[in-house]
Image (cartoon, rainbow, N blue to C red; front, top):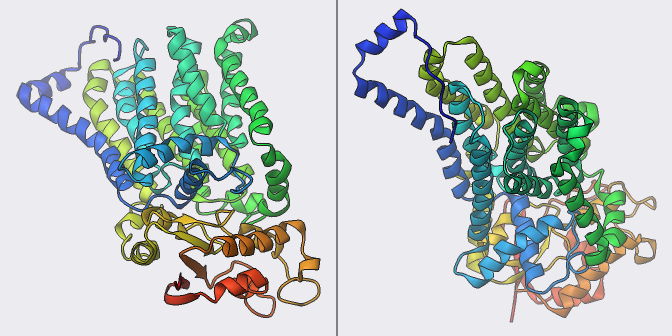
Length: 533
């Protein structure tokens, strides 16, 4: 709820004449229509999110969480580069899927919408009692729901989850600077949500570092250091960091060395090439156009906090040097909210209140529609959703549902997409200890020095021998119902292609078990082999 507006200033004669020329009912209908139009982009993205496919990385994390919930050990039986928090959070939809008729993807979407709902409720509570002009009030009411949903296909990625928490955190920073103060419960609840979001990746800590620097600069050390918000967030981060080696000792002892040696350079892009990539450059130019002006003190604390959060989101995306679409999502969510809030703030300052109040719904609608068009200009939504049943992920989903519904599968592929979410929709579980064969990509990122296509066991590093041995032993110990294999290995040519069946078939346990499988077909380079009873 926004505060009660002060008495209106007299509108210019031309405005008064135009208002008199319209019936009261017509003016109200126009305002309602524009408000609905401003919310239409958010509803459009909601419809996109409800359609398949679920984001492939999100689906893969969910699949690992379901296996963890079923009894496999994280970072021992399930090896992945992600720190444990995202898997801990995914235990909730895994449990819902296990205990209710809902599927895993449905349970996950339910939890993600609950997270967005909590963020929206916090934003409403933090805006209550805050001084907002009519333009700013209309803009935030329409823009916050759109920002939460605008990730589209990347909905549920850690970046999107974090940015949902970052927006109320920026509102809280504005209240801490400009007042009026909020209740301790609201402040600490918002801080706890933000701390959880920022803890998902260490790169995300750039955002609270910059925003807290703003609070410190505006309040001064004496007041800023008495504020419990940063201390609570720091305490939660330290508690989480201390819990990792205690609860998941294999993460630092086994997984982090593998990440450092083999993962960081996979699919990497140079720092300067990344800046001019198709995914990063438009968001970077938009940030450079708005952020310097938005950092001025007269722009207001909320706009300043959003500007610094957008810069922090850029830094978090840049240091990952991958250039993947979801890395830029926080720049879209925070930067879009920044642009709209800044434009509304300027309009409130230059327009008479009566004219601003009349134009507010139209400006909010125009900004939301423009932001939505910017998001879909070259993004993956709604195109993946529209083409789902014709795309290979939809075809493989139908294939697995027909041939291996609810079964265990060995997946020999370097890909996350389209293996996930096809496995999720087929209620199938991968038997591979990693989400894909990224470790083989890492150890074979250059050709073996001896000129052979594959290394012998005595030539293998510990990482390669771990993959070679565990895939063969797990395959022989409990043969899955089917094996899904891709022809594309993502490994350099080195005289001839890298063939996964040929590679693992050198192990006697794998070779003996493999005789029981027959090929049932092929879709876009993916071959499915079914076990013969």
